[in-house]
Length: 247
Image 1: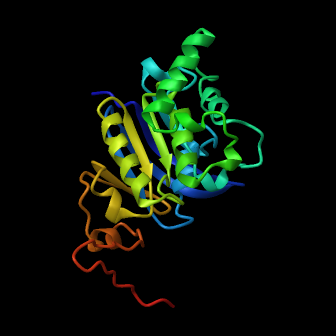
Image 2 (image 1 turned 60 degrees about the vertical axis):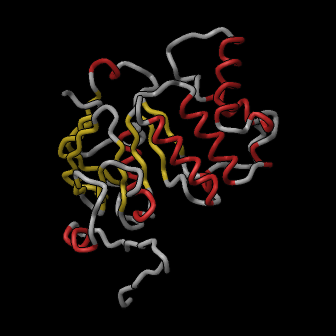
C-alpha cells in the first residue's frame, strides 16, 4: 500500500541550525499516530515541514499522487494559545475560511449548509455569530476543528488539542476523532501519553530525530531508549506519578 505521505531522511530547522535530522516516516490511510516528545524536541517543526511551512534542508516529503495536486489535502487544528482573539472575525467566518484553499467550488448556499452541519455536529451552532474573542478554550477548539474539516482533508493534524480545555470536551474530542479516523488519517501531537495511548494506534517519539513505535503501548524504558524524556502518568484507583530527580 502506498502511503499518503512519505518522509525520507528529513532534516529541517531554522537559520541553518537543524532541529530534526534524518527523520523517516510513512503515513497511511486511517493511521492514527500520536506524536510525543519534550518541548524543543521538534514536534512543531515536524508539523510545519509536513504542512509546507518549512523547507527541508535535507531529504524530502512526498504526497501520494492522487492528493499531491490538491491545495488542501491536510486539515490543521493549531494550538489555541496561538490564536489572535482580538481579530474581528465570527465563528461562522472562521470555519468558512478553511474552504478557501479547496479547489472544489460550492454555491454559497451549499457552503453555508455544510458549515452549519459541521457546527451542529460539534455542538456549537448556537455561537455561530459570536466573535472568536468571546469563546472559551473548548469552544475555540471546536471552531478550529470545524475549520480543519470543512475542506474534507485526507489527513487531519492536531497540535496539542487538549490544552486549555475541560475534561468533558477532551472526552468528546477524542470520541469524535475515533469516528473521523474511520475515514481519514490523524496525526495528534500531545504531551499526555497516558491519555492519548487509549485512542491512537501508533506512537512517534520526536526529540531531534524520530522513533516510530508500531503500537499504542509504550513503557518508560522504551521512552528512555528512544531518547524521549517525557513521563508516563498512570491512571488508577489512586492516580500518581513518580518524578525523576532534577539537576
